Image (cartoon, rainbow, N blue to C red; front, side, top):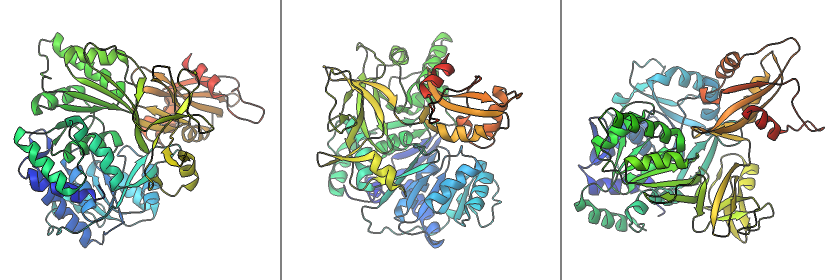
Length: 533
């Protein structure tokens, strides 16, 4: 469907009207209210000069205001930009400059970093602050912004969609596509779960929703991850597209008991997680509740969707003891996909990192040929890519990741896999220098560069090593300067002062010399072995 997603959601709002669209605790934002609030915020931003093609940063925690801000930007034909609220001032400055944002909607808790980022980026965007006392020059409160006259609906086109990912550059990288691509991704998280064919026009969408409406709420989805990440965003938009409701956790961070309570109280049928990072704490909480004689009622839950990080057989099996659900484990990337899926129900064999290729996906070797099933060779996952999608401002990386094979454009982000004679795909990790820890992507060279600036460090390698909860953890292998000493606490303080907290190493291994080739290339396999040991 080649429509701006604001127009798509306006169509949903016209059908669902007084149904709940977003809830958080006792707060309920109906479809009509979501549309009206977004139109008013769009009216305010429009009066501040924001228009088609300009970029609007959203630096908010999960909640109704995130969706209002997102839809407001889309109504203007502007481009929303996901800003990680964990970023330090320097990281935020990089993203705001790279995206050339013209406005930022932010939470009061991050006001100081937004102010520092804006100043360092040399920009003067329009600022809207949610909560707290507004102190930044030129900023207005979210409540005052919503007092504006609502923007009238307009005709729109197949506009740009931008999602930033940690990527492989060490700093955030924007993946730029169009709303037609977004619709396909989102529909897979909505209509696919309902077993309903994708609508191909606004009229078909309206007819489909009117057919679903008499049966009650179509979907109620609880996003565990932040909406600033693709996993949280696309899972949530899938529910909204299908006329459903997003039930946000009551707190700002991930609390497994909060998630279980939200499922119970909101009668949610779908939960989005990021592998064992979310699943292990959740099943621990469920076990505790049973042991204390107050088990959570998960009878409404039908499916748990996981993206991006290993979801182990053990935690799937433990979850299935508490709830009779479909565990859908997907290999996907911000750049495209999904590539492969593993679905597990009660009574099925439970496995880790073993998937089935999705239709249209391939496993390619370095020459662009298909890896033969049962050959034992490792290749890279590839999925058909939209003709418009590319990295913002990086033609070289776009050419590397988006390749034309047999006349078809594919996205090949670097997921290393093998395939057996029965078509079972085994995941082996990423071929790049990206460490995926709990869904957050950490570029090893960025952390290495920061560590090298410590006066005690002579040489350093940063690697990802397997972790049963986080998928991977950040580990540093260091050679010290003569006579110097360094503790893990000192190293973490040094890195944390310059980078986001999740980029700090969780272990420090000190060796007299680091193993490198004569040309100076790091032996990362050796480093990973030393760190793991």
